[in-house]
Image 1 (tube, rainbow, N blue to C red):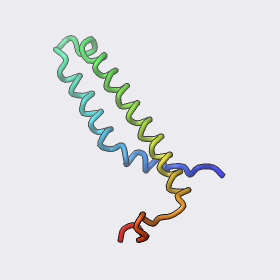
Image 2: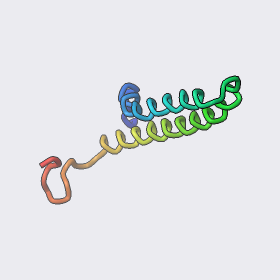
Image 3: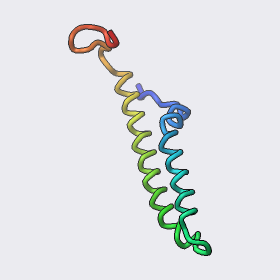
Length: 87
């Protein structure tokens, strides 16, 4: 039996805030670079932003897969006090 998979659309939805912040930060780095030095002064900050976003995305993807697997194999949906969750 294989672990459940996460729909890519669910992952995209979960990453919306991080993705918007990343894109905002990329544009800010380019805008903040002095005229005539856009590439030279924005490339490294954008590379660092990209590495951080890539790490966040990968961690979120793995965590969502772990969460889906744990939910699928959960022995019970009841809390420790004997009442069903959400009550």
